[in-house]
Length: 256
Image (cartoon, rainbow, N blue to C red; front, side, top):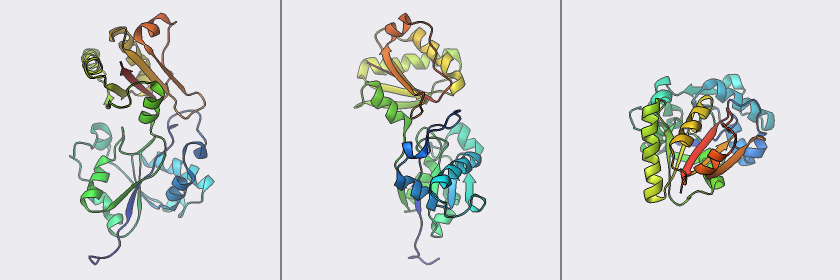
């Protein structure tokens, strides 16, 4: 390839937030027409999971015909270790995944839900594209963290996303106290997530250990018909009948 040969563009393709849910949101309710057209026109992908990538492309195809049949889509999964440990720390070399871009093919980066590389793997691919001087274009679509923050009424001028809290009870308690201290000292909203089947355990830990005046928000099933967003002081939550978040993708937040 000559030095001035055209190179492809890396498109960050958002996915609906209904991954793993019984009901799906209509694509046109959550993704703009332009995003669907871009997704339909791509034939090379890097993704979190090839099966869910194909399922999403099948939904896209029902709205906007794909440039190539599903069987001919070139789909590469990020390694399993990246899913478990993340790739934001720069330890995974994603340069080999960019070969189609270097050969002039546009590529899509996709996670299972929401915006790739935000609360999901993929940042290594974006970083490698920048280092190679390639064009990176984020497409418009739902981002659960920002939807939850906006709907919570908590501080949207100073906030942090801290990923998953520890599963072990003692470590989780220590982390809750650390995040609460940031809220009380700096007024900084703290956003975090959990695997849906552990939502109830995290919720009970938050109610038990947060100070009564701290505000606690949850945003479950965003963009779905059964979505709910609630934010109350912890003392108000404690006065309500027994409540546990549904087994749906949920963003939790604490703030002042």
